[in-house]
Length: 111
Image (cartoon, helix red, strand yellow):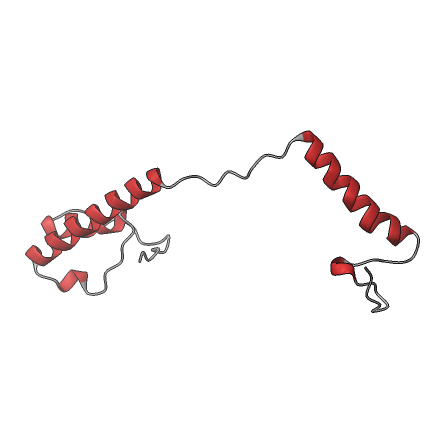
């Protein structure tokens, strides 16, 4: 789970190793409550773990297949538009106002 930091949270000036580790957590966009009070060794382990998780997430994102919708042929598109026109546009012009699932506005079931 990632927590997005507000825009105002900026990197701290580096005075010691703790500040460097906290800055690395901010760069990874990870907010850990009480991280300032952790021991230095625990903070190092936490930063290392978060960096590994981020690297794993990037690898998973690269292997995840991109969603590409199936492209219809020109003939399929023409057939679909023709069906739409004859089932919905023409009946609306004639005042029947046919809706989806074979039901008209008056509530009469059709075909």
